Amino acid sequence: MDLGAFHFLRPLWLLLVLPGILLPYLWKRQRNATGAAGIIAPHLLPYLLVSPAAGRRLHPVHLLSALLILGGLATAGPTWEQDRPEFLDDRAPLILALDLSASMDSDDVPPTRLEAAKRKLHDLVQRRAGARTGLIAYAGSAHLVLPVTDDPHLLDSFIEALSSELIETPGKDVPGVIGLARRLLAVEQGPGTLVLVTDGVDADQLPRIGPALAGAAPQVLILAVGTPASARFDVEGLERLAEAADAPLGSLTLDDDDLDWIELHAQRHFQAGEDDGAQPHWKDAGYWLCWPLLAIAFLCVRRGWSLHWLACLLLATSLAPLSTPVHAGPLADAFFTPDQQGRWAFERGDFQRAREAFRDPYWKGLAAYRAVDYQAAADSFAQAEGAHASFYLGNSYARLYKLTEAISAYQRALELQPVFPEARANLRLVTALRKDLEEQRQAAPEMAPDKIEFEQGADKGKETSMPAQQATSDELWLRNLNTSPAQFLKQKFRLQQAARNDTGEQP
Picture 1 (tube, rainbow, N blue to C red):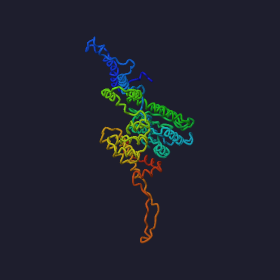
Picture 2: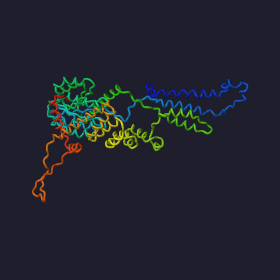
Picture 3: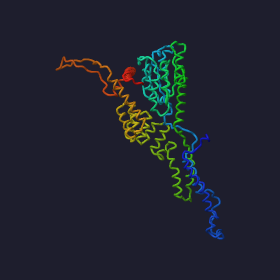
């Protein structure tokens, strides 16, 4: 217990301690013989006063005083330890940028540098399951593979599809990667880290790296892939890159030391940013006083003791904020509402149980969203009101690949709350994704008929074609696309690069 950090979250409730201390004194003074001296003649007092039994020292006023003092202390929220609520994402958001230039096909790291890097990224993604991670591929141009997501299986499928053949432009466009990473991390709720997995640097790009990192830029880490003995491993270039980006330089290892190194730097950067930019959360320890309060309340039920309703009202007022459950057990239904039980489970990370307990549609949807049941989340958020409900409804639709519905939900959130940067950023991302999908579908080559059949009967001899199944919706097209993510990425990168060449836009 850090006594230096000890304080009260709601110190005004400590005012209840004052009447708790004064009550026994006032009561004793009232019963004291000298207290009646101004009302009754002194020579008559011995004959008129009835002295209480000397053996009984505990009186109702003492218990009432204890209830007021403990209730005031509990409600004031004593605390001495910081806490980050468990239902928040407390792991650092990470952007992985993999170099797909031709030099990554070198075999000094078996089987190749690129394959070794992909295996390492697979291990990192699995290790960070549930944490927010994005994926960028780059060579002479930088391209977004996946926005920030907490789905490790989706990340794995696209990491596996990456190859040096996907990007035709030679080079190593690190400034372009930084620009993409800044856009992705702008919508996250904390400072993020960009990890460059590469074997060298394009010397012509070095002067652009400093300006690209100006302002609120992500932390950059460089993971070098290759062996110093190889002629194609640019040790000097990597050191110059680390100096230009003011970034720590690490190397790929056979064990998990490199993963520990990445997570240590990323988490330290995240926690430092959280401490600087947000108010600390403190654990409320007042609920521990509920047990002695309950014991004192039971002692108050004694034969011959009278009850003053004013005192009860004061006590109930002091304990009203302590309505959240402190534990869940067989008697929870008797003391706590379903929403209170759901909140208890939610704050402890038991999202499945929270979803079953909640009756409020917003919290029920939020619990389902955290439990990765996006269809159930969408069904619940659709019944809730407010901008945040519409925002999470859009997120749920986006994860279900219902992009049109997601766009409508984000637009609804912005109508209800015009200043909503997260909703606006997600709206841009989903709109761009839908545009990419439509361009990809339009650019798909025409498919030949599967076969030609000759009908029998009246139209015998007439040739009719049976066309191959076409993707008639985004959902069906995406399902077909998932069988070949490499082809999707290659064509997507080509279209993006062509659009940049036409407009002169920088990534």
